[in-house]
Length: 69
Image 1 (cartoon, rainbow, N blue to C red):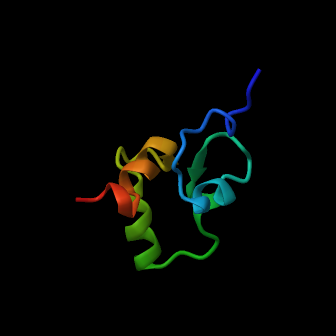
Image 2: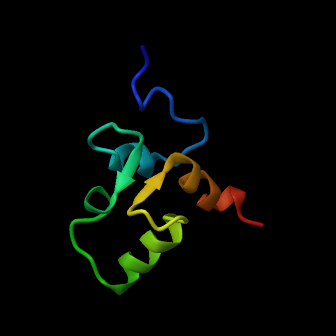
């Protein structure tokens, strides 16, 4: 059986795996930042496309600089 981390898609930025401290394959708001301000909140909202409070691997891949056109 593979862990959630082992099932992550290729090409994720290293911030994602570093931030996913509980290894569940997504980054929660509390994992994303300890200190919040307007800029941090805005960036998290941009990453969290469906607004559920978690950045999934697919959301992180879509927001990666290489995927922006």
